[in-house]
Image (cartoon, rainbow, N blue to C red; front, side, top):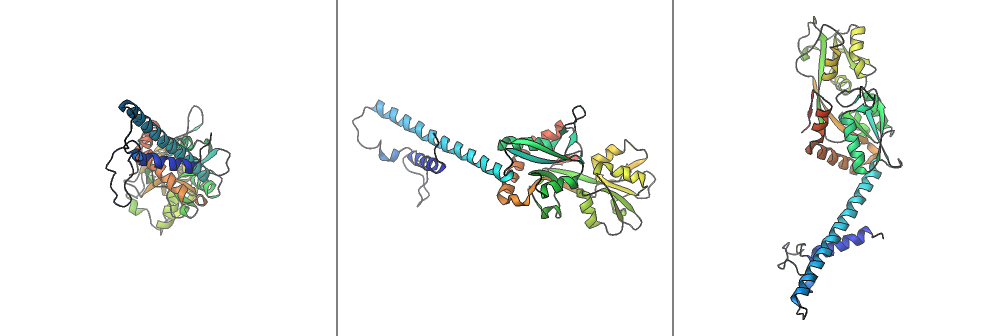
Amino acid sequence: MHIGCKYLSKMRAHALKTLGLIRCKKTNAWPLKRIHFQGMLNEPTNAPPKAINHMKKFLIFLSFFLIQMSTSHSQTQDTSTFANLLAPKQNGKLRASINLGNPILANKDSKTGSPIGVSIDLARALAKELKLELELVVFESAGKSVQAVQDDQADIGFFAIDPLRGEGILFTDPYVLIEGSYLVRENSPIKNNDEVDQININIAVGKGSAYDLFLTREIKQATLLRAPTSPTVVDLFMEKNLDVAAGVKQQLEADMKRFDHLRLLPGRFMVIEQAMGIPKNRGELAQQYLREFVKRMKQSGMVSQSLQDNRIEGASLAP
């Protein structure tokens, strides 16, 4: 039998009042009688004490049953509401845009070829919470992954927070912090990050990546040359004999194993704040729900455990 949400809420309020668990509206004080049952059991009665005790126990049980029933119905209603907000008209599916261009966020399993990583773990956890089937929409670059969410071809994505992307995407707070680094040849005269922005210096970046957007704003004299994806930045750097390659520290370290006589400049030129994002048309209510989800995943240790399980280095849990 279906019981309406409003009716259950009234039953819950009545049960709380019956148990003396609602403060007085005028004085904000708790009732003097811990259990009063609206005076029903305080009236003179000829019933034996044992019967009265049984009645009290029954009413207490009934009241808490109604509270639990109402709360459970409310939670189910909320889950359904947020599922519809985040994945409207998707026939029970949550589409997650996955960027394989950032190895800290996602990669391919060497045995199965399936996407793995903290992005996938977060997407699965969200789909499970919303009781939706997860559909991974996989891309090789950040730019294409972002575009899919902006064009409403995916319901959620995992991106670096950036003002330009914010024009079409609503972000959560960051869940992971990643270092952006510069790579040069061993014989390069460039020793520090602040020596990179000079005339006649050519920098390889991944098209549409977080550091591409950042350097496009910050670099004033050097020239940016864009590789199609982040994993191909060092290939472009070597092929065109460029001066500097910019990227995620972990990716550059992996590339140093493929090519000889390369080194990283000390420190970092930026900190990349990785967050979850949704199409702007999903609205602030959906954004707030997703923010709370990310907060819970960080506090529960889920994000840290995922980074550990996927053997990720060069990233830290965002505060």
